[in-house]
Image (tube, rainbow, N blue to C red; front, side, top):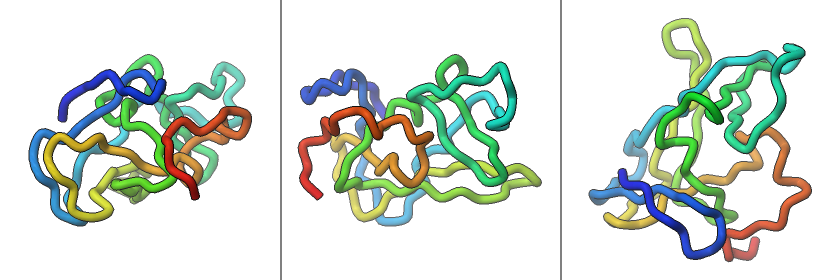
Length: 126
């Protein structure tokens, strides 16, 4: 993966360096784990929802996954699984992806509901 400056106003993004095949594991979403009822936690743009009210916040501590942008027509999918007793979010190729393509997923299903007041910048129409 490689960090890029996007052309659509979303800031940074991630491209794959090599071709990916449908269902290839790309990356796990890492960050600080919070529960929605914790008083010291505030939603950020880098929050992934898990089961049971838990959330992973990559705003201070995270990895490349936090730079994968939204698309209404994404090429990646997020799957939440229990891994070694902990819920985790894993990102996979939704279909074959050519090298040097920006990686995207649809935030609506996996992201803290922050985008409801923002205009979508992905350039795709539903």
